[in-house]
Length: 279
Image 1 (cartoon, rainbow, N blue to C red):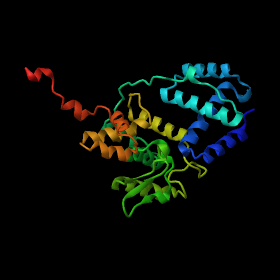
Image 2: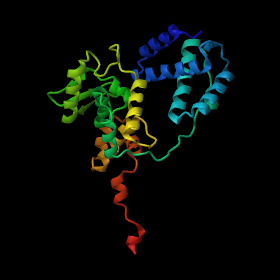
Image 3: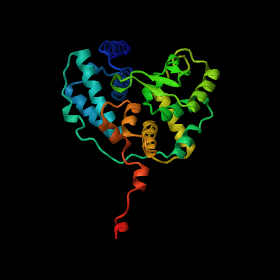
Image 4: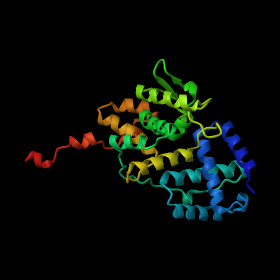
């Protein structure tokens, strides 16, 4: 049976291969969820290739997996079986080939404020505010350590972002004040945001915090925690910030990613004339 020891060995292997901490947590979480879906009484090594592919199809259908999650699940399982059981499985029959491109639900500044102020808990408020104020991925927020904050220079170091692209961001004064208020109340030792046992804050707990905040704020849009990062980029573009600067702030390797990410801003829409104006 693929037990805790097997997952720990896989985790150690990914660290040796220098996968980012965020990628390691994502892959492990997906494989554990897969094992839970299959049933803990079933040994993962006993599943034949055809069974694996059939189960993936079931999971995508039952859980209505998003494109990215679907792709990550296939990648995680392929790597797991190859490294732990020396089985090179072809997942191409169930691998998503065409990414959907629906228009994103843009959160307004008013809605962002409602989300950040919906929690009375200062830790929850600080986490959600930081993601928007700095345009962070959830994994980047969780990885922030006390030593990464330079209050004298009003800067914060963001480590091991996607593609292991570290960066330094300006620390807004209002966020610095909020961090200080939170720190005096919780006194974290290592990571800025930690769980009950002093460990790093769990990604699933952060998602629950966001989900509850959206509910309390009375927002009915289909949005995720990542929508705060998207709102950060979009609101900067609304105010005329150069897209090349936004690219660096977000930690993107390609300007094409930034252009897709920011999409069509409200300011752009407002300045587009109607053909009737030409008559």
